[in-house]
Length: 70
Image (cartoon, rainbow, N blue to C red):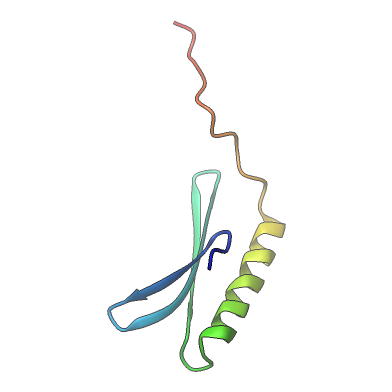
């Protein structure tokens, strides 16, 4: 399953979802554990956080490479 800005994360006993976005050279990251409410509730919480975060952040910048005047 692919969700924008949401990835499954399982490492060193942690199982859950991570939301990660970068805007204006600042990274916003939050983890949502499967424990105690389960994988589905954790994903719902991650989606809600992502949607709220995106509503507050500016749109992503232009990733195209600009040529410098030399």
